[in-house]
Length: 292
Ligand code: NAD
Image 1 (cartoon, helix red, strand yellow):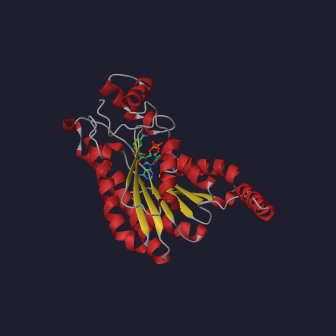
Image 2 (cartoon, rainbow, N blue to C red):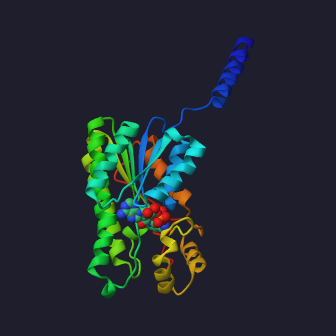
Image 3 (cartoon, helix red, strand yellow):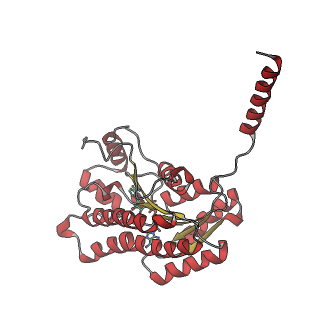
């Protein structure tokens, strides 16, 4: 190579190496995210993932004290100016509206909604009371509708697009024994996401779904009644259940809250700029496997 050309290449390589070493702007810098059920296992892991990438996050949870405690812990790591908590029952229309008003005052708007607040319940259909059926529909389907309706109002007004992510469940696609109310409510969440994706597309509002498989570690759901009911349905204990889910999956791996958080992060960020109305199963290959 002529001397000048060799010099140019060396110079270019050095400049490139310098660029690689420079701190990159964080992908969610300047974005505000509301995470419902933010005091729980998946919600708090998701909040942490988005905080790491520069977002301001509001943990909205029916358990306001737990949300405040989780937020206080995150404030120590990420700074008090980027995290807030609010007590909010997703089934209470007035509380949901008030929470969005509070977030507007605190952070000036919303760019990302992670609708994740939830419960799980199990009973054979003959033993499913109307109250239990309605509870599932209220918290899961209606709750997801209310929080996303309010998000849509803000996002349309801001007119700069946005991302809504539903943490649904693989049980919204596949049947699970003795859980008809839960499965049906989760299926409604998934279809609501498709409908909202269509409604929001023109305004650049993307709506996507992350479906977890069973996430036993870190989840409060798996510390209560649901655990006893699942253990009785499958005649095993918590460790046995975790192993059962692991063995059923194609990858033979357990799913953790952090895995779900990565899926949510994908839809929250511009990495998924061309995805809407989509479903990401974070299930180690369980939904598509014929191993049960
Ligand atoms: P979790 O119990 O650890 O967290 C759920 C959070 O939601 C809790 O902090 C709870 O206080 C809150 N919450 C419950 N009802 C509420 C209401 N009415 N209004 C506001 N907040 C409310 O459970 P998780 O495992 O983190 O579950 C999060 C979501 O993931 C749920 O929607 C759940 O159905 C879904 N999911 C979980 C699993 C799993 O195995 N953990 C599997 C599939 C889907």
